[in-house]
Length: 358
Image (cartoon, rainbow, N blue to C red; front, side, top):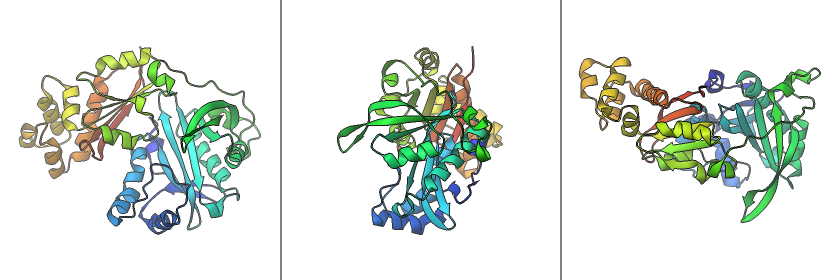
């Protein structure tokens, strides 16, 4: 993964600023929810409980960014919240992503979406190292189609029955933008690309391919947490992790998959790192991250999370445990390992690696 993606993000366009959501957005967010505006992504909460909203704006909305799996950015003009734009279905093996956006009704038709799309596309494709950005719009959504075209995206095809709304399937237009589209002479400010020759859509096999996906999500005692982290992926992409995930890496590559995401608590990850002696791995992780000999000797699968937190080592030990599991899952697909608190827990550690040839 390009480290630029998980760095703090602050993008400046001619009028708009794109930045992560934060607690300062609470008043505007409450106004949006109370007005029943329809532009927010489907995974944004409508619960105005103060504690829940504070956690969401302070942490929850930015978790996919920390994981390198996506990003939600607020679109602002001065102090006014105009809308949101985000990247999802990021595949670091293929260097591809999708983009989606929504504007508050009062700001539509004024060029904000086009400017935000150009700005985030230039950042993702140039600075973050992604190669392709895809945008989909229902064929009847003339406004969104116009935004895609003005931002320099190229119409590549039509996906029949790709989106269901109120029980009815609708066709989508598929637009694409490549990094090389940004590097042609005459692209003003490097943001509006000239024509490209198009691109080839990703293809996979078996059930996941039938859903148009290339990602397998393995969860161990963390099914709900995995689905909350990746709400855009269809159900076919999720599976209970087997006792030994190593054979799945080669098998996934053989079936055309490019990425495996593992979501699990401490005990399950420790067993993947060393099925014969998970406590040994946890002790080594603790010692390597600066824990005392006494602490390292006391660590077990049951108490590791609590003892790490008491010692101020939760973040570093969590990431190191994820790194060790990613190392065990060696092979020709990208692997991201996410440590969570439990079945409904929050993310407390993460490590990702690119695919390895051979």
